[in-house]
Image 1 (tube, rainbow, N blue to C red):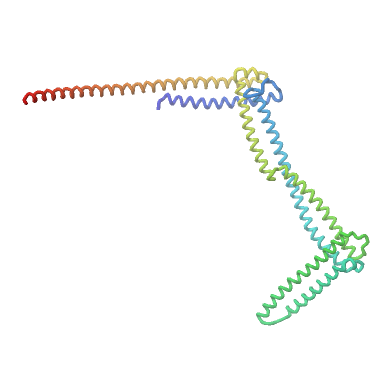
Image 2: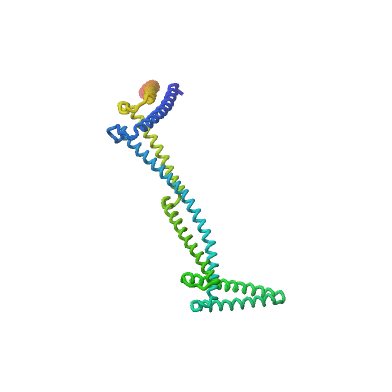
Length: 369
């Protein structure tokens, strides 16, 4: 490899390294100056790639960044609130499930006591008839089960008996469940009717117990509705997918982009400040350290420019040598062609001589005719 090309590669790499070092210096300088300027308006123009234009863009990015950070803080706070609300909803639903079971049992006891209270027979007559029907079915089935269990027989008879017992038990369970459902429905209707005077005894005690549980359930339902509304409002703030994690990740990605754009703004501002006229425009904000940074950046710029000039000179010298080499190649080609022409002329002369001698021989032969 031509040593000069190696030198060009070394100078190019050094320029790349120095250019990066200079950009880092000027990016830091630009960031420092932008921070010092703060809310001041020291520049007249604010458009394009000018100090004022870059300052305006930098401020917009800083505002976007601050707003994004605040949104994340708010989302994280809402995520914590959502977790608390979900826990409360779970706790209330757990209490409600237990209370509903207690209320169902209390209403069944109330309904049973109600059907056994003569003072309300005019209201409960249809239910009493259903109760009697179910009692009759239950007694029938229990008697049948007792007979089946006492019945003997062979293997096939026992198999048939077991099948009948299973069917009877299923029907018995359904009838007992229907009886409890009848009691519960009657108890609930009695509560809804809000009777002012209730005879003392089991009916009054069961009515008081069921009423108390109903009030507790009503309170839990109101509390649950309030928590669910809070959850709905929080989820709305999380966006369409209702995921705080995805929303935060999207905003964090935007913050990362903003940081990159801010760094680019700082570099552009530093580059403009290092240009002729830029130093004067930012002079009021330059510290001694900033002045040293500008001096170092100028040294880098000068060194890079000198190397660029040297690279051009070396490349020009290489190009000249390459052109000379081409000329030498062409001159050698011309000499080669000239040699071939000389050899061809010599060959032509020999052939012309042979032609002349042959023609002379022909004339001598003609004379003999």
